[in-house]
Image (tube, rainbow, N blue to C red):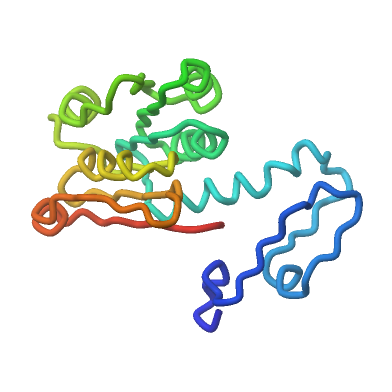
Amino acid sequence: CHKEKYNLCEHLILLNGSYADYIKIPANITRYNTYKLEDSTPFHQAAFTEPLAVSLRAVEYAGVQQGDHVAVIGLGPIGQLIVKCATLKGAHVTAMARNPFKRDMAKRFGEADHVVDISDSIDTASLRQKYTPEGHGFDVVIEAVGLSEVWEKSIELARKGGVVNLFGGCKAGSSIQLDTRRLHYDEITVLSPFHH
């Protein structure tokens, strides 16, 4: 908290159950994490405030810039918004998921440049070859699934000097294996932001 990273405070209070007509909100939440909406803002639009804030943070924290080749793995609501945010930044986005409806949504809503079916596997070598300049890998990889095996694949997809944003939180006790040579000598930056 003293470093103004309020999402990491020792006594972080997460407030669930905010779909009630009335709710008592602790002072720390109102002080740091409450935004007044205009009276004209419809609730169905206001509901996107938190997932959009999370998605914007994912893209900004990873340093996505215009012209970057970005892979987004996982196309649930947050993944969809990440695709759209990266596209609006001017990135070339390759969206990956197993579900055909979600892939279609990433194309229509997120305006992804490419959508990839990863139902069978995530073949990192062929994805790098097909969707990145000269097959060198993605500038930024954002994982929005929360599975350790997908975290591992995300690191494999990055180019030398690339950024991997492990955004999907895995369950407690999960672990990953990685090629430390690649992480060190290829200067891969690994981020794992939490919250917005």
